[in-house]
Length: 493
Image 1: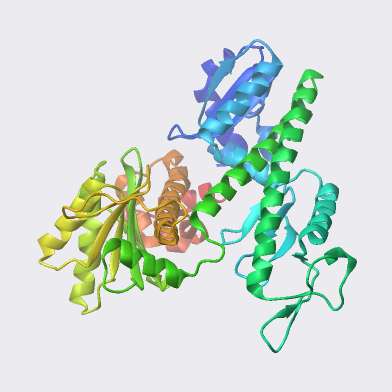
Image 2: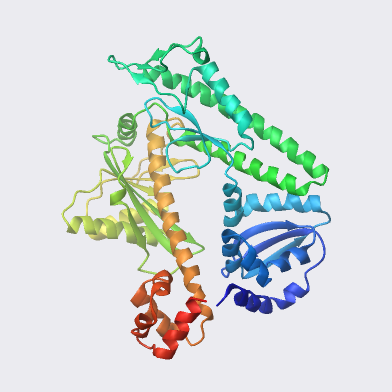
């Protein structure tokens, strides 16, 4: 169905709500068919702003991202306020509370400049980038203005003797590095020939300085935002608020990075510390971790990730859909997926990992142990990692263990757990997105559960169905020539 037709139908179904829209300032929350908040916006006049989303011309004239948002809207909620400044403040609080996908995407799309420090390099450099990656680099920013940022990096190079993105250091025969071809004024007072260890000390000092500079910029942005709001420059205030959100997020990520990613300590040392803390005979070179993910008991999935020698072994990652029951029971889900994983390893004659980590506390680790008992298998070393206080839980009578926050062993376990959590959430999100895409079939007349099931069995997902021709659709049970042509036309408005 064309976008305009779809939104005409949606407008008809929400006719009473649209008719009753107040001409007052406030905040609106756009929701999808599952009731999830997609976008939070403010309005000086709620009637004009919210009604505009359901006008056919809006769907055709907007950017692709806004059109995608409009296609997903099935309902909305209003919160009236007394003034536009109140709407601005309330909008900000709700974005922080719900973190709606499209608010985050729009802020990210502004591509404020960041500083990236790749700690995987022998000599980490400070580079400006506009794209954040999910890697082991440290990021600072984003910053609203590139000019002051470049001046700050020049100051870093002079103050701490670090390398920027344009440097070409040379490795010497004795293993040391010459940072520049000659002793430049920028590193005056610093040795030009250094060991990687000495240079990393400079990097840590520069990162500490840059983090302080980020907080200084953050206060400046907050002050500028308040002044814009006081002058009733609300669009400017909203832009500055987005920059504040982005910078606050990065500062929080930096704190997490410092907790989870040591700069100097090796994975070998971290594994040795884990062995000592858990009473293992050898450092655990193979570790597997399980996590359960669901949304209020729906789309229940699980992940298993594997680390070899402290690094992700992604070809061995596994993901699971829960098969033995329907509903919300993390313990039963954990028992099922642990049982499935290790019954398969045992059946194939493959070695068990040297350490199994369960994301959760006493209940989750008890469920994992129960799976091994049911299979008649001797479990490998098994622990739980409870998020609240990062407490290590044992399956036996040993007391729970808390390693120091700076412990390399704890940081490696956290990295393993966080990777399992990310992988599970990604799978959960993929399933939800697939469900939303397939919901387009809900509005096609004459398509019951049997025919719909036959379509999905034949094509797998809505994207392959869209790519199919009339002849291919006609081959599905229950579809004749007329219905196949109508469905093809419906999917290609």
